[in-house]
Amino acid sequence: MAVASVHNELRSEQPMIEVSNLTVRYNISRTGQTLTAVEDVNLTVNAGEFVTVLGPSGCGKTTVMNVIAGLVEPTEGTVLVGGEPVKGPSPDRAVVFQDYALLPWRTVADNVRFGVEMQKQYRGIDMTEKINDAIEMVGLKGFEKSYPRELSGGMQQRVGLARALVGDPRVLLMDEPLGAVDALTREVMRAELEKIIQGTGKTVIFITHSIEEAILLGDRVVVFKSHPGSVLEIHETNMERPRSERGAQGDPRYLELRDHLWTALEREATAAVRERA
Ligand code: ADP
Ligand code: MG
Image (cartoon, rainbow, N blue to C red; front, top):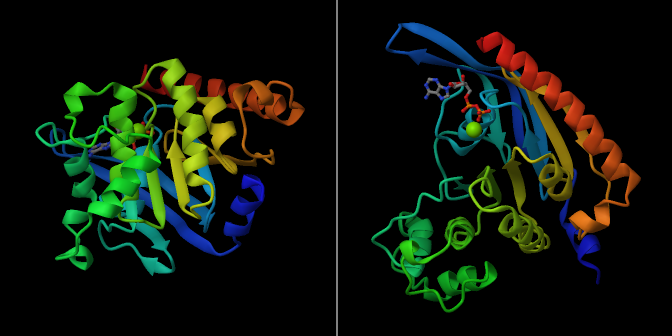
């Protein structure tokens, strides 16, 4: 069976993440002022869907993701995951960070183990096989005993991904995960990521500043605007999978959406810079 159709079968119209009228204000203790990071954000992500998020820096993308992760509380509005309100972090909503956030004194296997060792349901259970599976899934077999400092940036990010996958979360939250790796590694990892995620049925929110990456990975692309941060546009990508950068160059849908997103983001980034100046 083609990978694309497997993925579509795992997708459903069942909402997994429902962000409703979300507003987040931060208290700036230094000045005593409050900053509205995002205002009235509404976004529904269906089970098994891969949603990418683009927007100028500072428009609140990370804030929204942190609320879904349970790391930041809403000031107003609600966030439901699987129909339940988010009350704090959960292994069911794993986060992959841009700066990898690995523990330098631990081996690859022990960093991946960290993804499950805090969780009650795995206490007393031998997780070695699950850890090895996750390491193999991200292409790091043979590096189990290596330390993060011995690995390239791309490999370290694979460890971050394995750590997120090992607990078999329903939701994967990825905040510019490929932002710190070089362009070639980035393209290789994007293609691999698509392969890894397809067929797992996971619901993914993936923040990126690459328009190409957003279109190639996303079932839908969400564009944020700033001041205050909120959803500006949402686009269906409607392209066959697996997708490749080279293949997409000849696809009018890709070229049209890329052009549109360039224009929209340039406008938003210019507005954001003017406001700050
Ligand atoms: P993005 O990820 O789109 O770059 P963020 O969500 O990181 O945006 O930030 C949105 C706005 O909220 C920015 O103006 C940022 O400075 C501010 N902000 C983010 N986190 C905090 C915080 N913990 N305390 C105060 N202000 C914050
Ligand atoms: Mg951010």
